[in-house]
Image 1: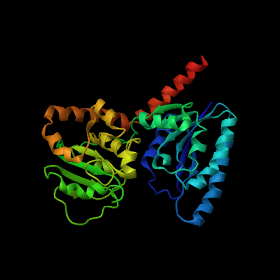
Image 2: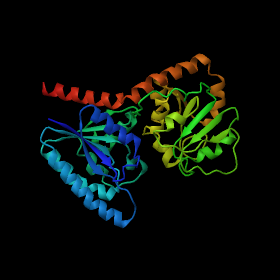
Image 3: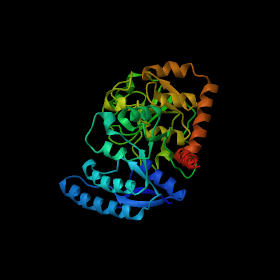
Image 4: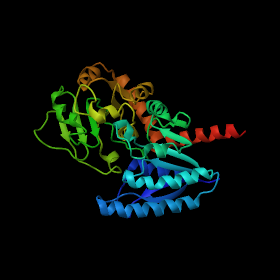
Length: 351
């Protein structure tokens, strides 16, 4: 019985791809899993879709031929391609399951949480023997959707592989807050209102699609960097996990999504030894507070008061929690824990 994982590749080797997805492949292959490469979409438009349809069919036909009864295949869901094209993989996955292959789906994203249906989500997930969800809230959502008969385990946080510990990221200044990620106004509109907050709180922004307009007091845009370079570039005493248009809550489609997902930026901050600030209604909030990884707030307008009343000892406790968790994320411990627990549960059943 062998273990295989799908690894999505570009024909252009210089393309960085998704760090979260790439890290999963690296963690698994380091543990002895065999990588099975398939292509991800590269361009846009009808010609690329037609090309990818043929390529996808050939890729998955090849994958299905390499697996035998009793083998395990881990797939990162959704596949990194056009949803309609990705559905060409479903008959091959169904065929593998019917011949006794164990299927594991590690969930990165669920369109149904945004109200998007008809993209093949149910056809994929109903084939799983194990679903790896972000957190307990996502697990409960999956059960409500009818997947309660599946084995479901929570990742809690995405791993963030780094060869060495970043040493200069945490400035030890809790009033200096890092914001990393897509700064597109429709996703992170709140960053264009940060200047309305008490100027004692200073924000450093990192990421693409920032619309520079009227300068905001206490807000500095530091540019965009590849995921591999960000840990050498980030500087701050807290890392902010927030989405939507408002300062007083996380709103809109992206803000509401925080109630179910674990943003990869949280793992970035922690891997850098920086404690996090999260929305108190987000799925991450309880985990962050319980494990002393940061603070949870209902509104960014609370920050000056929260920071003013935070003792140096309290802040150092959060920094220590971030450093300890960061060490686990940098070596891929979160995914490793989930897979070991699943294997142990299978062994108990067979005994």
